[in-house]
Length: 145
Image 1: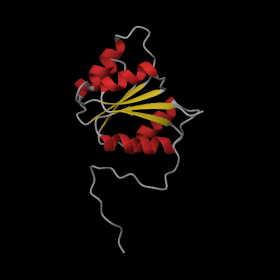
Image 2 (image 1 turned 90 degrees about the vertical axis):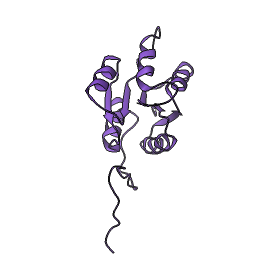
Image 3 (image 1 turned 120 degrees about the vertical axis):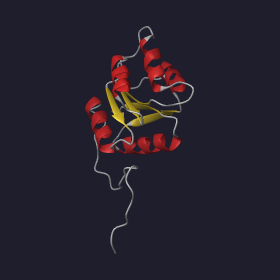
């Protein structure tokens, strides 16, 4: 049985790449472009994990976490927050609001996949990829010929 992952990020390319990686690992993913859309999806569908960007228009990740804590009978879903602006204040606030893990961008796909696999051990298991996902903070050098 695969696990349902909600990916909330305003960057379409980031969402798509993460979805591709997690679906390769056996997860089913749904995408949302901001926190407001993510909350709406939570009302209509059950998810096992939420991967949440922080800096987004309409509703930030922190606002999403805050709203989620105010929902009566809120779903108990582990949330992995990813942010390009990671600092002690964001880490403290996200933890206080219930984030399971906070990861800085650009993140290591292996680390994120391992956390998802830990949260969904029966369904999502990191598979050795036949493709390489490059860390966007590093420059690419072609192999010598």
